[in-house]
Length: 252
Image 1 (cartoon, rainbow, N blue to C red):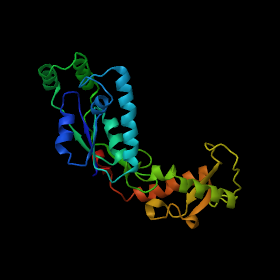
Image 2 (spheres, rainbow, N blue to C red; image 1 turned 135 degrees about the vertical axis):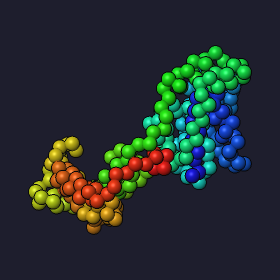
Image 3 (tube, rainbow, N blue to C red; image 1 turned 30 degrees about the vertical axis):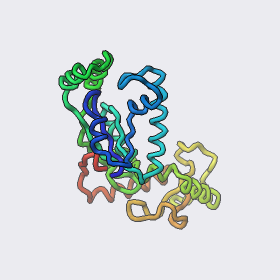
């Protein structure tokens, strides 16, 4: 994978690991390094102003990283929570390197390196919030059927639903059709999206069964309630023949 997320507590050796793995031309995104580029005289625990600027610049680099998949990058971040790490892994399609030397070793390194006093509190706080990477029970994505930790897998289906091509296709269906293809009833297109009789676009052939998400011929107008009921029946029928999925989130 082109992106490697290196997580762990302060003094775990995240930056050292990133520089060890990176080759010439690779990108290392590290807030401490950015802070020093902005003029900070400290190696760690920068002033609030510099920290805020460095965080903003780091976030801008991460946005660019999402749009340019050809870059090999190493991202340094603390991320004590398992959910946080899973989110970042999914967001960047990254592999995870979690460094956990133990709290005693981190505190020892902080003393030997002469780190600022705030480092010790940051280490203890990280371990108070730390959650080991769980092996989560994955459910099939409601669209494509691949393992997902939420209703839709973020890598493809959730991104599709927020994309411009999907919105254009929705607008076309809404302008060309007036009745629900499932029940035959008229669809009031002015109802709030949460209403059971509001408008939705349904796929004749479900994505998990090989249907084309952006094919106009595969999309029809439907009531939200009819769409949900039909999808639930199809998923229940399909899941009855499937084994439960237990996967490592890092592989999703």
